[in-house]
Image (cartoon, rainbow, N blue to C red; front, side, top):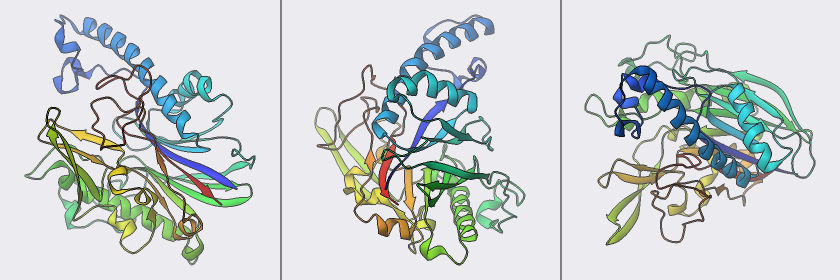
Length: 367
């Protein structure tokens, strides 16, 4: 019995307009800056037109990326709300994949922008096994104090009663063809800009580290005394990496791609003692990336931010399973290592439109 499990940061699947750019240029789209805008009403009219036109191309590509995943269960990050999810599934996904993701789960979490984690599920797997959701548990309300996770590293800018998860850790207890599997869907704290003399990754590391420790504690409590045989997966955008591919060179002379191991990562919480396995590690070293990061020629790298971590028992049972990374929705500015370039989806742009800034990850698992 095979289950195809995927994860995808769909990037701002929003049902609201954001007009804050009229007063805050940091939140203003670059195309609007090309025009003289004389009033807030005019700005809102232009922003509405730009957003709608851009969104249609983007969501067609998002749907194409999901169709290429062909997942039975898809974990999503950055979904605005259930209404946005339903509109996208009916207006875009259904047109491409037909009778598909009837079961949808989303719980409003903690993100200040209102982006949440969600799960789409087919009624049954491709080989006809029923997919049942027994219950859904949100852990968005947990605080550092609740799980005894507050420490000196968090003291700068955080308080013991603050909520741990910047979005949520959504737990779904499922039964696939009668066999149990538990999913934990997350979207950890983003790296953000540099602050207090630290780069964005280092400055926000304590928060992600606490989120990872919280996920681990939740799982250890859920499977107390049964960890050796537990069947679970942790999926989502974890906004951190244990290695990255540094990119050098330029278009004229050619590019170089060098893998570099990170000394510290929040994800060490999962990997250091075999608590879970990042199955993307089964791919070649230069072929594990899910995101292209660039702040210009001086700061460019590829890295894995999107994960499917398997419990030891599930990983052993699927020792030969190698995940796929769907990159056809990446914009043309993304630099691919030699031999990895793919055919892009129709109408893909240099920077936009694109399916997302992230690539979906999907793996076929035997249960």
